Length: 175
Image (cartoon, rainbow, N blue to C red; front, side, top):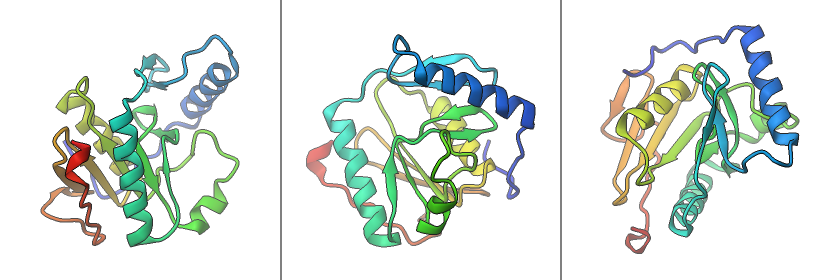
């Protein structure tokens, strides 16, 4: 279920339609605050994150920045072959951020994408997102489980440890 080593290109017309729909929703005061679009443009609603979820996101972002350098950002919309998804944390080099500073959603998947599992997530949903990030060009995808367990994925599948040398030692009191 994991990615081939080559990034997948999304049909430009489909990409344009998804971005148009994303923009319309973002500009509509009556739209929900948290959502994604699947590859068919269907709205996927997300509940507001818990305080703990937000604290884990921030802790992961700080660790990524400490180990890889700037800049890690939480909850950025990313265009993938599975629609417009919003990873909990993403990391890219400052040069890549400069090239996409006016893009919403990002046209290309960041180097590192992190999903922090919520009680309502299924394993299939999380692996679908991991696969979409990797097929879109992410160098690594990371899943933080409900009890703080960490899983690393690369283009060829699950990894024993981060290929980028990332170590996520999260405080136990967050879980």
